[in-house]
Length: 164
Image (cartoon, rainbow, N blue to C red; front, top):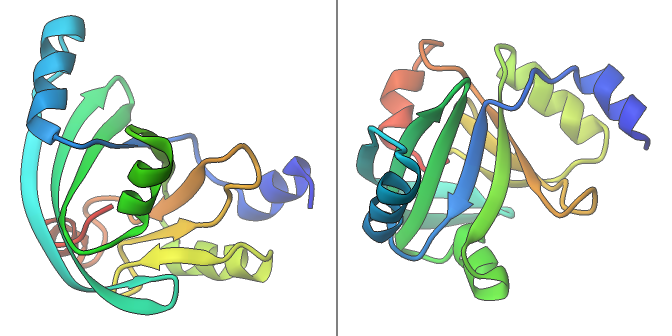
């Protein structure tokens, strides 16, 4: 599969989110605010009792922080409880860029299309309608995330409960 195949078949919009795994959200926010003037931040502690992580149901509790960088949302992710893809990344690579998120209006169709193209779903919300991490790591080492845009059906409720 070529980059052109992915571009033509998935037709993803521009990057809408940059997801960064951190050890301590508050420490990272303090640094980003003082060094770069980033903010304001929307900080949430969320629990997801039944996230599907590589085919296994898991409980994850996270502290998330969101800030806007122009047209892109910066998401900081600190896992508080449960084992997840994020902690695996942290153990292997340390803090850093975890995923690029794409806000797609036709989430279910894009997810189905990505799976048909051979991209495995690494993690997905239990309702299969808010977010899904796709295993795109062999193409540059970064996970791609499909995200339902805020305002779409049920998402405002889900975004307050689900990591990602």
